[in-house]
Amino acid sequence: MMSRLNLFLTVVLVMVLALLMLVRVNHSLPNYQIILGDDMTYSPAYGAYAPNKNFADGRTLQNPVAGTLARGEQRFEFESTPEDAIVAGEQLTNPFRSKKSESAAAADRGAVVFQAFCTSCHGSEGAGNGPVAMRGFPPPPSLLTGKSRDMQDGQLFHILTYGQNSMPTFAAQLPPDRRWDVINYIRRLQQDAPPPATQEGSAGVSAAEQVNASVSEPGSSIQAKPSKADGTTEESEP
Image 1 (cartoon, one colour):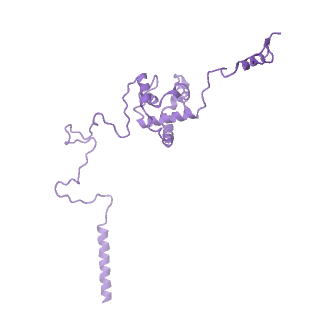
Image 2: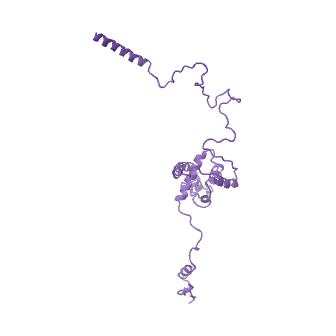
């Protein structure tokens, strides 16, 4: 009796395994669906440029509603003028300068973009000594000194968007986020660069030190005597 039962169970097991092999799930194919009537669970997808009878113009890809902005996009309503560049510097805010970690990550991304688009004129360090400038093209001003250090981030963004003088616009090549990355990298270059030399000359040197330095030069006809109590010196000629 047991042998017959074991034989029966063995046959059943083989049949179950064979059935599982026949009906095994193919994950590369979509599941079968049974749709009764006009069910909203099934919605045919249209390609972006496919004809679409659901819209009056027959297009699937529609223009955005006037006045709307995409998520993360900044409003940029400035003209290509130096005056509007200054206004942009006052109104635009660098979205990656609020946190130190975000600023560092943006500068790292900007380094890659800068090397690809900016070094030909500005040089790898931003000093204005790129290969184009070294071969006769008018060199751009250094990004490490002068007006570039004093410009607001928004003003630099305006220049990258519209261009300035011989510099072309990069609005087509670089999306807004990448332009901000370049600006953050420029700020890093400026921070790492040595401070610009002052043009004060000897303004920080006292008058007494200037006199002592002048009379110590060889061939000077002026000799300085010890200073008086009031801090003045006596001068005499030989």
